Length: 268
Image (cartoon, rainbow, N blue to C red; front, side):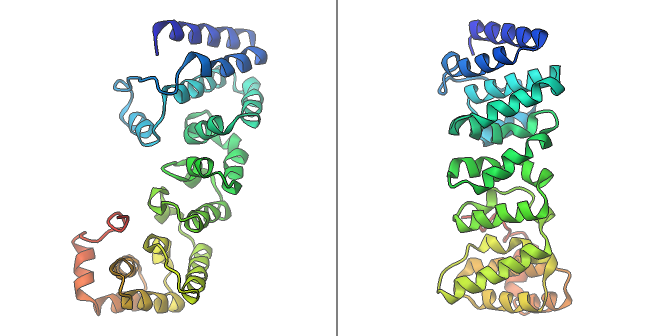
């Protein structure tokens, strides 16, 4: 960002916060598209490592970061007054603006206030919007309830999205999701369709007799990645029969023990 634009933004933030001007906030937000190019390069080397990594993972542009910086600063100045204004901005945002908001929502003060926006993104058929909240984003694991999180995980599978991009799958695994995964797998098998091996990751802690049968099917598959997915599920399960089953496949067991097989390695 050039110095002229930096000064312009700084002056605008001062004016907005001192005057508590919703009109000036809306105008400034809309003008960012003209002031800051989407393709403009920017230096984030001075940013904290976690922030820098997150911006890089999300492929954040200077225009996106500028928009969120504006919202962050006005909320820090007076959250009670500006929260409704920020909500209004999001309600009328275009697809690109909404994508930005969802990707970087976690950095705003009290981000749970905007949970309705994040949950609504799960219902969209616009992949960029869904991916913005679902992929490489800590917000869902921090603020979604069990039903909402399950919906996100399952829709990613239905859309054949990148399940490896969902954060904290192991921590948010739950018994209800495990049941749905097994039921869905049976439907896919009945239709002679394949299943992403990563889809099985949440079941480890909830292995039961039904899932043991599913694991046996995966182990018998000609697809090596399905064999490996079963091995990982069984290895991280505390179910006695799961451990016994995996012991019948010593080569797979050894590969999991030595980290030659992991959920990360199943992505490719």
